[in-house]
Length: 193
Image 1 (cartoon, rainbow, N blue to C red):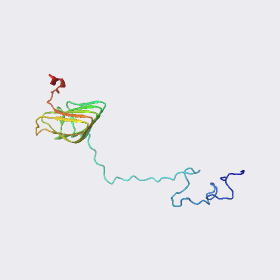
Image 2: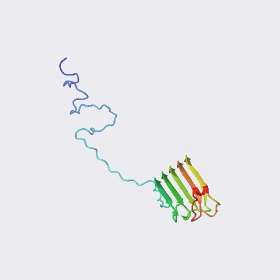
Image 3: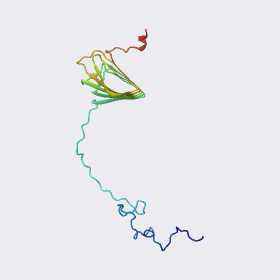
């Protein structure tokens, strides 16, 4: 068969209102679509001007900023973290660690609140907390998955501060021991003799 193919334009047939250049006879395909103006790829298209908006004040004021000592944090990843000697312990201290070990020595620390909360988050880590004699230690809440937690403290002095520990550990260990200032931890091999 010879001649023009079936999809060739025919001058006597109008298709959806005529050629693309003549848009006067076109009717919208979706009349309720809410489309206004030409498409972005149409020659001569430009974006509509944007009205500037005024910044509205917040309906409620922002909460006051907290001081850095109210909730401090210690973080260690693939490292060793040690806090010892004379240092100020905030009321809430967060220890975050992964593949690391942390030692928090509270024997000479300055504690200004009656209760110190330690929030310990550890994965594949070891945390050791050393408290002075007479300090009460409370283990509250937390989750231990394949983790080991041991607390060994002596007599509790009612006038001393309390340490509240919340531990979230995965493949980690937490040791809390009570030792006097200057006392060294016992070496494991000393128990063999």
